[in-house]
Length: 218
Image 1 (tube, rainbow, N blue to C red):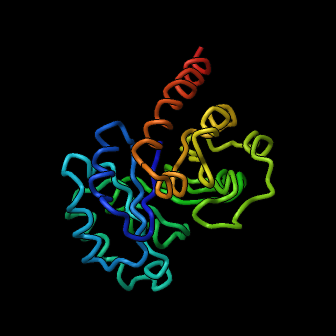
Image 2: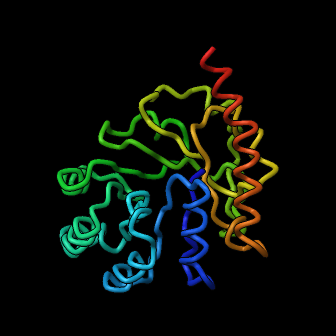
Image 3: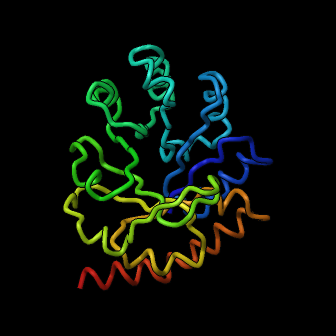
């Protein structure tokens, strides 16, 4: 399971995130597009030190569009906290070269399997979306039949993460369609109790994903 932060502030956000890490959260994608670099620095400090290696910092589109402008600030932030991951929404050779010399693991996003199959080898992880109609972006959905689409996958080195509208009732199906992991955003942060939703998904993951992986290894 991967979680993406809500773009806006969430009450008791740091406490919730630290609790989810304690319970077994593998990675947290930190996407706070309206935060300044200083605000992001202080936000990261609210995460317990031993959990920070599991943070994936999203580089804002404004930085990508400005090319060499403020990307150095993000490299400084990443080095300061000794982080391993960044996420680029758009994969451009110049940014891959800029960041991969400083940070070993690069993540991105795609919207069909052809894009995933053609990602450069420096990209180790990618979201593929929207699998289901988005909760955080009402009206955003795909006409793709993902069960068929994912059969065309050839890039087996890439960790492919399902994203978009994922709720607890989808966990069993996702274990069978050809993705390696799944991400929660809207269904978690808009729920009455995010920890309860997290626990429910984790329990279903342990039931269906572990069994599925064991079957695949036989």
